[in-house]
Image 1 (cartoon, rainbow, N blue to C red):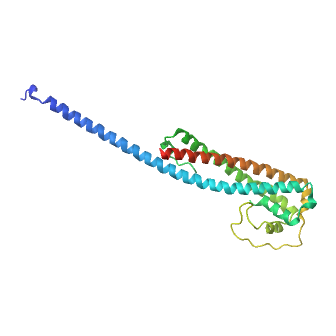
Image 2 (image 1 turned 30 degrees about the vertical axis):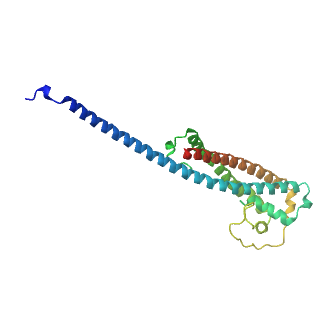
Image 3 (image 1 turned 180 degrees about the vertical axis):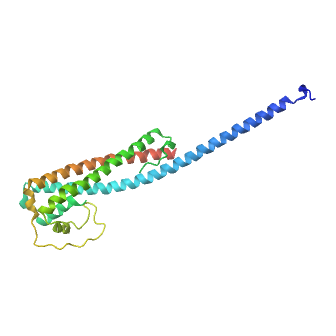
Length: 234
């Protein structure tokens, strides 16, 4: 029988310590690798988000051009309502036409270490909801308020022909053919109709509110890009 005093306890302790150390080192390497993988994934997400933010900023610039062009047309109509004889009927048709022309959740935001950036990204869907709500409201008002009025008070084909250049402030996406029309209708008479002017004033309110919503989203996107640049540069 082996004498207990003959067992090489020192060597066994050293080997056991080496085994434990190797296991701990393996865990540390795995954790380090996982951290690098998460960091690489975070960087990939951030780069993708920045690209998407920049694309949305370009779309917002287009939306601003459209909204401000419509607001300008609205103000011209309201100005002409106090002196209707100064409005050219063809110009009036184009201005009326302006009235009827009309995601970012990666699912892995917890990977992003920058707390401020996470807050910006987390709040962004609600700001997109605001701008989407503006678009849906525009469609609803156009279909249920503006078009029903214009169908009974105007020549829609004449107005459509006058506004064939496309979206106000943006231009045409495709060429459209002129609609056949009968005798020209002088739509400047609408400048004396309180119902028409009420619709125009409401449109001014709605487009102004939409501009404010897009300005808020624009600021959030620009701030998000700034924070992403800081995070990726680190």
